Image 1 (cartoon, one colour):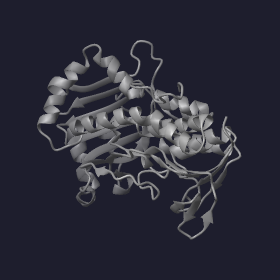
Image 2: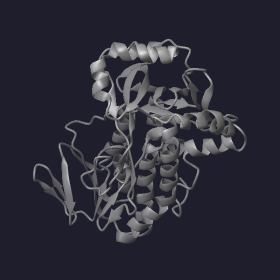
Image 3: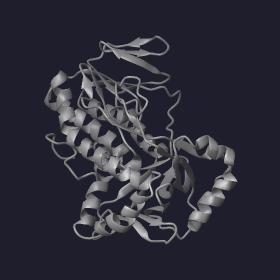
Image 4: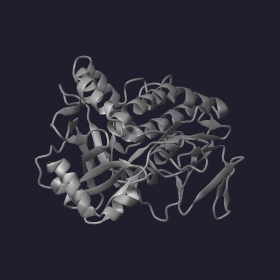
Length: 393
C-alpha cells in the first residue's frame, strides 16, 4: 500500500459515502462534507445491479441494502396500443443467481451511512461547498477546511467543483413513491408501458424504507423536460385519468397520488469528463459522467468509480493514482454512455420512426441468441470489465 493521505470527500451521496468507507478501510484519514442539516436522501427508487451489489459488500453494506430492497429478476415493457412486448430482459433466467436490487434511495442511503458511521470518519453537515483550491475546501459560509492531499468530488450532477459540460436531454420524468397495492403486476419485475416514445409509465417494486414496514413501489411518468409546470397546472386528476387509460393495470398505483408534490421532476443530461481529475482533485459519479437512466447504471457507475479510486490509491500515489483510476474506468463508462445515447431516443423522444424500429426490428432481434445473453450482460454491468487493470469486483 502507498502512504496514507488525508482526503476530503465532497458529497454524501452514493459515490461519496462508498468512497469514504473504502478509503478509510485503507488507512487514509477521511472527512466527508455535505450540505444536509441532518442525514436525508432525495429521490425515489433505483436499481443496484450485480456489480454494484458487489461493491456494497466490500464495505459491509450489502446485507442491509438487500434487507431493505427487492430483487428484480426481469425488465418487461409493452406497447400500450397492442399489448405487444417491446422490452424483455432477464437477469438470470436459468439459475436465478443474478438479480437487480430495487431499492429506495432512503434505504440505500441508510445502509451506506451506517457503514460510514461504523468507521472513524468525520461527517461535516451544513457544509455547502463553493470551491476547491490548493488542497483547501471552501464553503459558502466562507469557512475553509484543509489542507487535504486529495479532494474527491462526489457532489453529483450539479457539482460546483466539476468542469463537466453536459447536453440536456429533451425528456425527463416525474418520480414518486407509493405503497405496493393489491395488484396482479409481478412483484419482481420492472414493468413499463409505452406509447410510441413520447409516453412511458413505469412501476418498480423497491421493498421497504426505514421506519415503514409496508412494501413500496417507485412510479415514473416520462415527459418533456420543460413540461412540468404545465403538468402541475393540468392537475393530478387529469394525469391519473390519462395514465390509467394508457395502462389500466397502473390504476391502484395512480390512485395513491393526490398532489403534484408527491411526484418529483427529474431532468437528465448527457456528458463525460475526458479527464476526470486534476492535481489534488478527482471527480466520481455524476460529477464525472451524466446519462439518461434508461440502462439503470447511474448508481452502479458511482459505486464502481469509488472502488476504482480506492484500488488505484493502493497501487500508486498522487497524479499517477488518479490517472490510473481514470484509465481503469474509461472504457466501461464510455461504452455505457454510448449505449445510453443510442437507446434513450427509442424510449424518450418525439420520434415516430424510432419506436417502430424498436418494436418491429430491434426487439425481435434482441430475443434471438445471443441477444438475450448480451442484454443480460448490459443490465448487469458486465459488458466490459468495470475495473480494467485493477482486478475483479
